[in-house]
Amino acid sequence: MEKTASVIRRSLSLLLAFVAWIGGMLSGEPYVASGDMILTRSLPYDVTDGVSFGQGLAADGDYFYGTGAVKPLQYNAITKIDAKTGEIVLRHEMCIPKELMRKGYAHLGDCCLYEGALFIAIEDFGFRNPGVIRYDPQTLEYIDFHPVPKEGRGNGRIPWCAIADDVLYYSQSNEVDEIRMLDVRDFSYLGALQLDTTLYKMQGGEIYDGRLYVVTNTGMREKTMTVIDLDTGHAEPVFVRCTGRLDAEGEGLAICPHADGSLFHIVDTGAQVRISSFGFKN
Image (tube, rainbow, N blue to C red; front, side, top):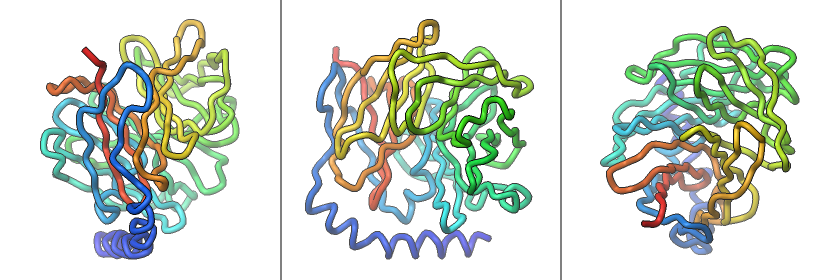
């Protein structure tokens, strides 16, 4: 299994080498395009490593936990990264259990940490049975899987999940006009929060200080982070960032205060994978 995963990563690296060369000529460094934020740090990785964590991101102050997936190749992974040095300390490739892969589950999305477990949004090939899968953040080993109840499946996509006060929040990926909710204790459906606007290409979300922050993949280099009031459903932009690369796809979001003043950590993926951290201006 490890040998197969390594071959997939190396093959993908070769396939994207030309794209990276073109993208590099047309690209620059990431920066804040608008909003009261600053870029504090940006960690670049070549796709050979980055493919294992280029989909989702969670953080606990000491480590980043990233999810990776290449659905056509049935590749999936979870990676643990030292938040201070940016070094990969542990990687679990082909981490989706075989019994779930036989049912068509192949894509890991954005993730979050809650009560000692790593919760990850997971989709099947046909987008019929979205679910949430859990892992031990210490070992990156599988714990269990929970399907989204029928009444909460929507179009079958679940690109992200976030949890607060025993409520798991999630949405579909495009034309998002509501945030759906599950009771994390038994994964029963609790209903949906209607938004006062429609968001597109939603990729990641995290709850901080009682509000839901989400990131989308609209635009070319410029990507927007939006904050949603969980009482009213009101949504408004927080800031716009420039990824620096035309081939970069905005992916997962983690929110965790770091000593350098950063709070928001976002992963972008393409021919290069980058974890960028942002904080509020003083």
